[in-house]
Length: 444
Image (cartoon, rainbow, N blue to C red; front, side, top):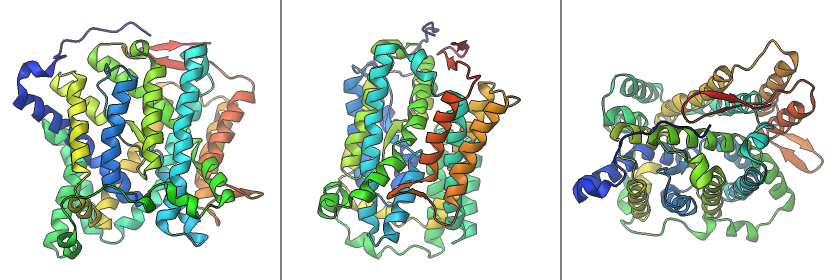
């Protein structure tokens, strides 16, 4: 899996001159922007803090990975289900939405620590042996379940104004399918902008609060960090939150590995070998853990920016770091955060329909590409229980399963059941690990 095809490209963007260097950085900012700010809009987290720690997290990742990997870290959609479940449960128990999200961020912090555990195991035992326990049979249905669990909230947002939602949805599809150049790279952002603009024309947006927002300010307050939990500590709820969110790291770690393979293939350098998958995992985990402490979403490597690399053939990681610096600067503008916060729910819903569906589609693709055999009864049992538990618990009467004082979300319980069943049922096969040049390499 370490053999790759060398790619021609620019490895030092400064050779192009400072103006083009800056423009390339701005382009990477736009590529990640739409999806990154959408996560805090959907969850209620701080937009400013999200941008700040997307930038800081990217710089941290580059430092840990020896400044060799041209990856941008933005908000992860995989944890949306965890945020939503914990927020709903916290509000039911009389908490404010902000405090409930602070508890969720602690769960994300522990999920970030899981990256270090996996990195240590990979360093000690090798990637093939460790990933043997997390085959596509487990991660595929988990990813499918994440998208399906979130779909209900997308429909609810769309229902507030279906015309606006459909404009956002159609714009995303047309931009992605028929767009050229930069248009094709930022369909999500365009969908948001077009639908938002239409809402303004229709008089659906009240900009009163925007005029009152400052141009410069801090990206977060104490109430939006995990320090607020210390003032209102509920140990049982805290343990339930950690248990509910930590298992999601299984899916995001697999996502990270896939992204590293994609970036390696695009650039023509085997980043799984040098600087090493253990380093990139630690960088991603550290960025996620750090962001969660300050009320920002979990981070993940962004495929959108890999697409920009493939388009421009400029592989210099310094360009990504420049984009990260731009994100940090933008985070200190409360007026901008307010503008994002005024976005109509229907606009969010229209874009979410696409994004949540794409999450599930990625899970389906994983099952298809790795030729998971559903003629095998044991495989059917594993996949079926993951899906039915995640979706059934989410849309059941209580939106959770309680075992004593501990509460399990559907996603958490399905992950635990899936990994356990796959490990103990007879007939488990070694997983196929995608090589960076696109072929499968089986491991037994």
